[in-house]
Amino acid sequence: MTDPERLKREAAARALALVSDGMAVGLGTGSTAKHFVALLGERVRAGLRIVGVPTSEETRMQAEGEGIPLATLDEQPVLDLTVDGADELDDRLRLIKGGGGALLREKIVAAASRRMIVIADGSKRVACLGRFPLPVEVNPFGLEATRRAVSAVLARRNCPDDLRLRSAANGTPFVTDGGHLILDAHLSRIDDPEALAADLVAVPGVVEHGLFLGLATGAILATSEGLVELG
Ligand code: 5RP
Image (cartoon, rainbow, N blue to C red; front, side, top):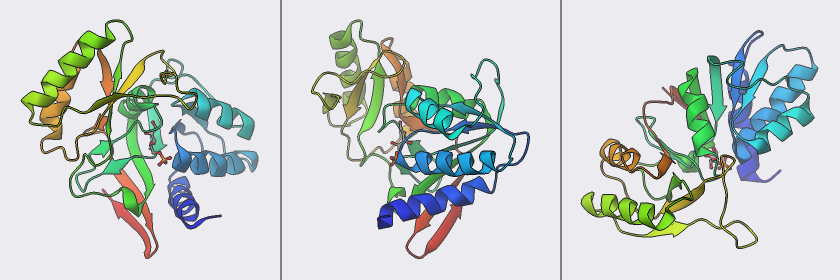
């Protein structure tokens, strides 16, 4: 296993200690969450009784393969714990998520959870959010009008107007599990995440954005010097 993968697995293993019998657990998306789902699968096969709610079709397929009992969020509308990765986090546990395109379901699941624990390698910790492009999930209807409205928000917030429609590996537009598109905003830094978030959700074609504010309750960061826990 490469060093970054080993660190991700260490963070996932620490988060696994927070899971106990009877819990409803939100299952995140991405390469770090994938380690958590694999380790959780081992525990389930050894007798742990939990129900998982996946945040993407990709995670649902992995969890099914691991033999983890699953429910929908409608069947299990309040979750004890969600464990998910992040593209960036600051010391106030504000996050950028959505690099894997699952931000909408990830945010709905996080908001339905009593605790949301971020697992990541230490490189994801930043002093100021924004180096990672901010995903903005939009309805395909009226894409150009929505793109202009998002550009206007960025101009008002003194951010660079660099919005790029995300592509899939085959060069066609990336389509989310919900059938939406993603505009990635290359901003370099976000000085006021709360203000930007409020402006973005006010744009009618915007379905969700990747700023997760006030949702994470803790973070487990694996570094080469050991585990760092926030929150
Ligand atoms: C997916 C996400 C992921 O949690 C985020 O992209 C981090 O992924 P990884 O663990 O692969 O770095 O938000 O939408």
